[in-house]
Image (tube, rainbow, N blue to C red; front, top):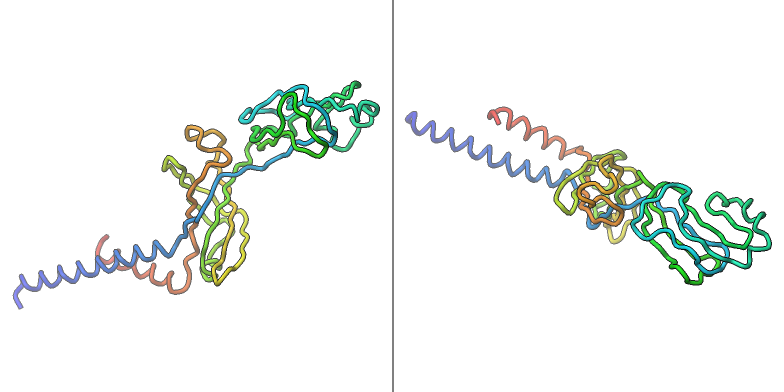
Length: 243
């Protein structure tokens, strides 16, 4: 065999090794993570409601407004509390409202946050037990993602595992697994995962980071058993050929 033939043979072997290693690396990459079937940004929500029926006489906020704890949200005039305004002010949850002597109840924000929903309007009549508004607490944003995975892959999910969150503008922030819940249907683990991320700052990324924004959540799975051995072998192969 001539030297030219030997070089061609050697080059062919190297090419095959690189090709196989590349395909194996792609296979391993696909096996090392799972992408959500659906995911969106959520927030810790505080509902503000009234125990007393009456008419809305003041509306201080609308959906999307930022509020501080104690800021007024609504005032409701209720004749049913006029005669015991002082005792109503001493109620357990009186920190979220005040009652005037004429029966006007002023409801306030329970936390710093953003008004995500308004259920009452100025001049409307509200029944006792109805909601007036919902406030999303500042600094409480997280992601809820749904996944359809095999029971085997479910066992490879770890608390604190990395999750890559892709926003609608294709930018990515990194988070970690906070909570896992699962139910198995027809051999498939329908899994819901809550993800914490320091990169979820209200209003960032041109306003995309807010409750309700859809995202893609890519969960990194633990590598173990055969997959881990294959990954080690591929890394070693690349090292030997200088890649």
